[in-house]
Image 1 (tube, one colour):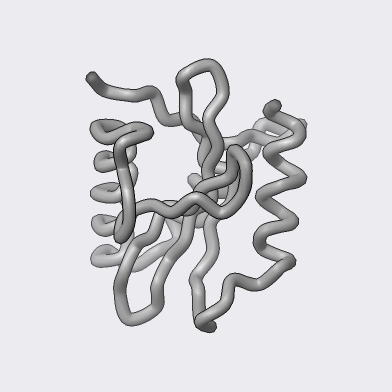
Image 2 (cartoon, rainbow, N blue to C red):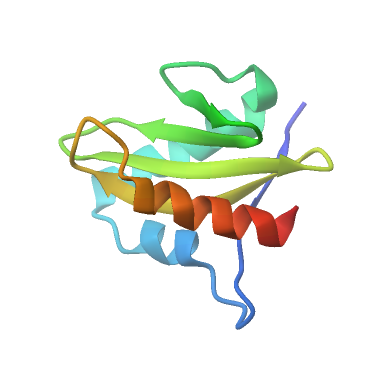
Length: 109
């Protein structure tokens, strides 16, 4: 079964996650699309190292590379919503990145 994956859109109809993805180099872009495809096909069965639960209803899609990429996502009514994406440069995920995802998640849920 393929799961539906949507991107968060703000009030102006902009999708920060899609913009982030489009701005990546070709290799990173391909890795991100592959990871999103894994989410579409695996849904809630996608586990580490590809996905990780951070909090209730907040998960991260983990894209490896020289500079790792993380995409936070949530699920509502059987559909996934990509909330926020960033390049992870430190071992610990910055609190400000999680806050952005949580704020966007509140808009969706």
